[in-house]
Length: 103
Image (cartoon, rainbow, N blue to C red; front, side, top):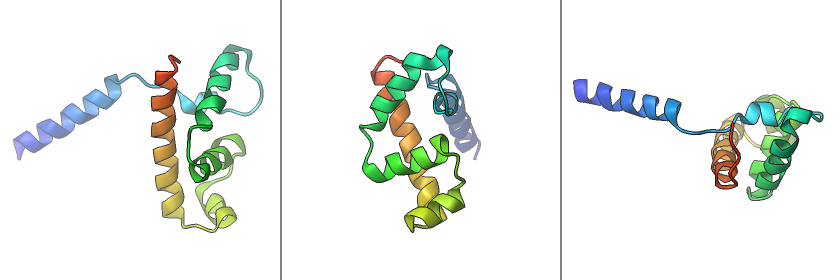
């Protein structure tokens, strides 16, 4: 039991220390002079996502819809929206890191 707890703690610590990109801030609507190039990179990275994932991410972060609204708009369940959004964020973070974008 103790080794399972330690393994879980290792995973949490690794996530905290892993390099990442603040997608919430980058996806904020409107131009932000401080984020100019970062937002351009985010838009490029969005082009690498599957269409459904990009739609969900844009509806959530650029247009400000909540998950239930997105589910209704796209005709899918809220669970699918949540999972798609999670996977889209992970894929975008990997792509942005690959592009050399830093926090």
